[in-house]
Image (cartoon, rainbow, N blue to C red; front, side, top):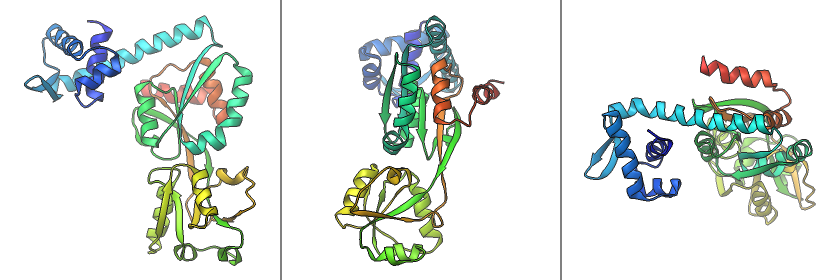
Length: 309
């Protein structure tokens, strides 16, 4: 039994049993992956995968019990490497952070700047995507930390922490009729074309829920992942923008004005997640505490150990 065999099993499950894709992930050949899987099955005396000819189609019942064990073995091997790195040099390494564009653009710069002053020899790798992909990257070990608003708490193999709350605001061109309203309403907004985030991004679910509960139809003419893109199209007069408050806090765009919408949409909670059972290096704890000062190392360690118990 060797780690390459274990990785072949794990990646076959993650890649939908496509051995060509597994080979690409593991930087080997498809016949090599097939051989590694078959050799481990022969050593264990059971079939881990169901097959249709030479093609893998799913996990057998023994395979469903074996896969979690393989996941734990590989996680502990990674933890062992991380622990060795940590004890040999606590100030060097790479911190991989998976997050959304909004967090990377508007929230993380100051945190990263402070972190770099404390750990100048730690390289930071920022990866940006949707909350679903962020969770997948943390679960697979491609990212050490995931930061997003929606979805991270829904994965049982992630430990996630609430970090801070924020709200949406409406953004309109200077001189827009909505600026004359004393208190913006959902009905007011429903009378105009809207520009906001893609489904699943940056609290979009709370926007849709608010209009649905009010029984109002909306005309969302454009969606994007990027707050800057949304504001650009608002400036062109295509519609009223609904964006995250942090996206405009440091912005000074003369052509645009903001209108409070805290009373219209539910608050959003940005969460930070790490993989359950993962060994966190010293500088990872430091980064988490800089991003969320309300968290202590004891809070984080306790959350991780509760799962282990």
